[in-house]
Image (cartoon, rainbow, N blue to C red; front, side, top):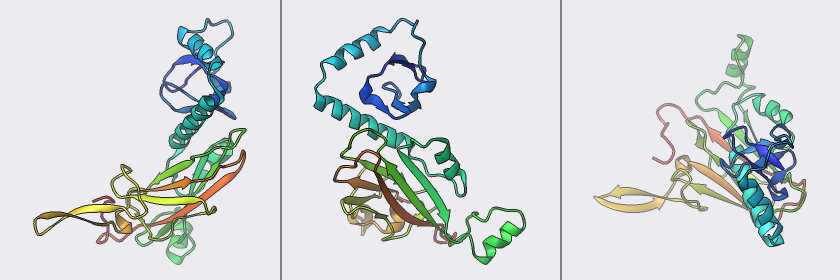
Length: 248
């Protein structure tokens, strides 16, 4: 099928391994888009690139197609990762596209206390963050493909200004490994290390939760078609005297 990417304008062929429900991943800019809205009319002459892609697909083994599909799925997941604003925006985004591979919602757990309700009574948003507020982030990954997938992982950066609350990252499956980064996503481990100067020498020490910059969930088993993986964590807006930028 010949499609035009709405992001970068590339016109090319896409074989079936690149499709995920209503979505397809552009091989040029690696961003997902809805293929129904990007179809090129049948009268258009296929580009040499698209013709080559179709011929190469015929010779691909099933294992190559599986690897290609997993790579495209990971691209889709990372393309869709973004911390949503508090309130109903995440829900409306999900309703607009039921085929999203990853949906992230955020809820201020303090929205029902007195000061937030006072804000609401004055016409403001009860989800407004105050120092000391804790936000619950929930990430729901759905396998939108027609077959099981393996090696699924998804990452969420800590929102600017918020600090991770230690021991709050969870998942609803026992085969999910949770890892953290304290260097803006360059490396991950269950106990990240940071470097500091002590008595003029560089030494490594365990990072504290407030120094974490990213959280990663790795599913070691397979995720069946249509199945979901739910992950959560909590982040706090510290008081001004406690605030420090994650990773520093």
